[in-house]
Length: 310
Image 1 (cartoon, helix red, strand yellow):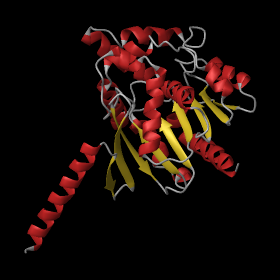
Image 2 (image 1 turned 30 degrees about the vertical axis):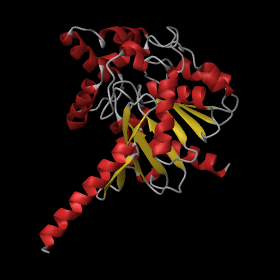
Image 3 (image 1 turned 90 degrees about the vertical axis):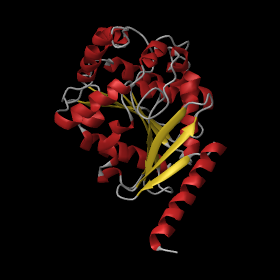
Image 4 (image 1 turned 90 degrees about the horizontal axis):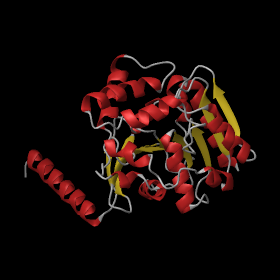
């Protein structure tokens, strides 16, 4: 048999194996040698397919990154590329309605905190995480709270809440956030497009430019309109009791110039949770992990190391 025929047969067998795994509902993985990352996909309890990727030693302390509204797993590129976090197992995924994950059409698919929690549980299982630190940015903080509400905190080593939404309350969110909740879900395509671009700009004090800005605009445009429509109708607008009851450590990170989530949101969690720490980033808006990545990564690495030592 020729070398070319052998290669073709090998590809055929690999493809057949992947098809069988998908039919069985098992997480699919595809190695990416150049980046050292593994991609995976997994179905949540309601059948929604979630796509993610992992990097680093599976035996190292684990960090699961959960992005914000209208963003994607690419939000964490400055963490995945930084040597400061090279000694950890890093996992990130696209929330339902975002990026490469499935986008249910009904707003109800995004209104239940327990569904968001089930998504995190599915990713934890698919990525074979033992006891990760959850890093929840903005909506990602609410999603992390949904996981604690429905699955408890025993399997969570710690929380890093980054400009996180933990309670939907006018006094904790800015008027601009309330405006965007309406305009970025408009059924008028022209309005929705323009307001989505404005929303992205409002996420930063130190704004991205060039190719990075272009990519973020594309990602924001990929997000299902139903996400925002459903989220604001959640039957569980207040997750503060969940974070108060959580027994593990919490690191709160917040940009001083956040135009969407008031610092008071993080201050309330600090007051409710004894031993939690609040770190204010003086040169950041809503996205300190992007705007001041060196400091953010140092503080996250120190937090995860401290947690791992017990």
